[in-house]
Image 1: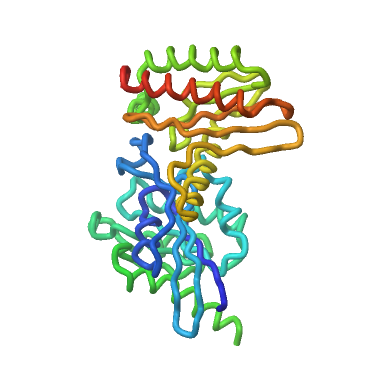
Image 2: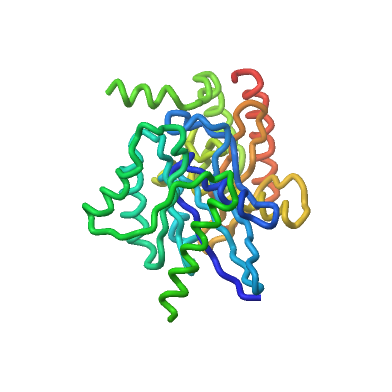
Length: 176
Length: 143
């Protein structure tokens, strides 16, 4: 069985753990502990090691789904988990204080540690409908970056699968 | 400055009494157990609570990495269908590190102990267990 790897990263609360839970065909291995960092996010639990799930596609392709912790103090793990990944999915919380700054920060970090495909998923779009989704395209254009970027509901498998399919499709295009 | 203060206040931190008394626990651990070069107490999500070191270490980084390692090891032992992963021992050329869970009821923590290479592991574990039991009591009393 062919084995591949996709990494989910992004700031705390963007939905990485949820995305993997929605997509995984196996019970997810998680390293969630009590969150004491309430000024960043008020959620009860936070990932401190990694999440691990598996997605089995038709044709026997098994994709390992790796979720990173979001907080900067765990950034030592990001290059470790990104090694050998076929793609990195950066998830951004649309309702965060400054989601464009989050996107810029994570892209800057990951382009230094990872040279493969990056896809961006924007979560919680419904929580802040007054904020224009075009802010991300505007920033990407202003910074000469051309990346796939989608609004996604991390609770919906088909939404998260779209991000994975985009990575696979871009690989297939490159292979031709 | 007010923003920074607000951010500091928004973190769940142990009480001042817990911090002071846990400092005594760490001191006792170091002084009653031979071979310990440093000890650190951290929240399970990687924030330093207290530490005593002979050398200069970055307590923040140790806390983050240590909490990550213990969580990963606990995930590994669960996958191996073992229960109650309590500690992990790391063996380096010039020393050892022990990371143990402090399963407090209100503020779960971890203890990281850095030792010389030649130590009696049983003695270190015994000292750590005593310290952990005391920290659990302090958590109940001063949460």
